[in-house]
Structures are given as structure tokens and as C-alpha cells.
Image (spheres, rainbow, N blue to C red):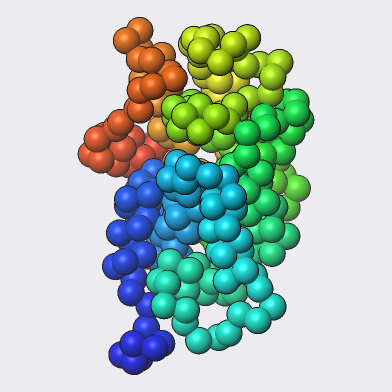
Length: 277
């Protein structure tokens, strides 16, 4: 590899970004084959950079501008071959090119993240599941494609179930940020009747649905090669997350669930060794 700073990517900066912003995906990537590990870490870092936009902006338009910058820098027709200077963008762009990751999936991913910034809740369960497929399923699909190659219909069905389980969990974990920004992450029919109402009933629904989707994933993984489980290792944290979200003292509107790095790593490592999510 060249030592020219204009052509060298700071891979440690990419790793640091993944650890800080997408720790579940980062730890899962550590169990990928060595020749593909950095590619999965790049996916984790990219997803973490996009996911952290919403909690950090006070105005939806500002978040949309940031997402548009990432979209244009990655997919714009004028993108140059030279490195941009953003290590996460540059390394992920290389992953997209090498593995021919579908640009249509990336377009849907960016659009869904931008839509989620605004106050309007999903129209119904169909719209909610569509957002899960784009926001949460896309990074899982990319990880599986890096490990396996283009996805067939069966693999897509598996990723859809995994994305739904992951998305339902994400809503529970990020609920305080969404409510603080005046956004409801669930359709009106599934949200509490008033703005200041308790969300414990909704957390229970999220847990039930996430566990059902996770059970579907586990059934579909039976008999499949190990790399399928490797791509979906972040799902190993769904059950402990919902245990924490349903603790009697946990206030869903206010409290943030924290998990120690070693606890995350242990859950993912155990899932890898046992091949059971």
C-alpha cells in the first residue's frame, strides 16, 4: 500500500468510528474472516456515522443536509477516484465498489434515514416495515453480500426478518432521542394516546414483535453456512436489550440503555461460537 497521504486511508480512524458509533456491528465484524474483516468494519463505521445524525441535530433540515452530503459524496455522478479525506467515506466507498453493493439499496437507505428525521410518524405498519428494511436491513444485507456474494430471494427474506428484529430494537433504544426531538417512531395507531403518556405498553409490543422476528431468523438459519450467522451477529444483543428496556425502573421516555463493551463482546462471541443468535 502506498504511503502517500493522498492515497492512504486511515483504517484506525475507521475502526474508532465503528467502535464509538456502531459497537454491536463492530464487535460482530471482528469474527469475520480476516480478509473481509476490515470491509465489515467499514460498513459498521458508515452505518454508525449515519445513525448518529438524528440524535445530534436539533433541526430536521440540518440532519437532512448531512445525510445529503453523505449521499452525494458516495453516489454522486461527479465523485472522483481520489480520496475525499473522510476515512469512513473512503473505505466504505471501496467496499461498495469491490463488492458491487446495490446503489438502489443505498438510495433507499439514505431516503429512509432522511424521512425519519421529520416529525410525521410512519403511516402504518407497512410503512414501518419498509423503513426497517431500508434502515436496518441494508447494513445486514451488505455484510452478508460481502461474506457471500449477491443475495438470492431466500437470503433477502432472511435479511428482511433480521432487519425488522433489529429495527424494532432500535426504536426502543432510541426512543428518548426521538421523543425529545418531537418525533414519534411508531404509527399513530400504535403510539400512546397523549404526548406525555407512558411508553411501557409500546416497549412490550416492540419486544414481542422483535422476538417473533428473531425466532423467524433462527428458523431460517438452520442448515445455512456459518457466514450467514456471522453477518447477523448483532442480533445476538436483541434479547438483553429488551430485558433492560423492560426493567421495572426503566423509564422508556427518558432512560438510555447502556451495555458494557465486554458484555457486548461476550454475547456476540458466544453467538459466534455456538452459531446461535
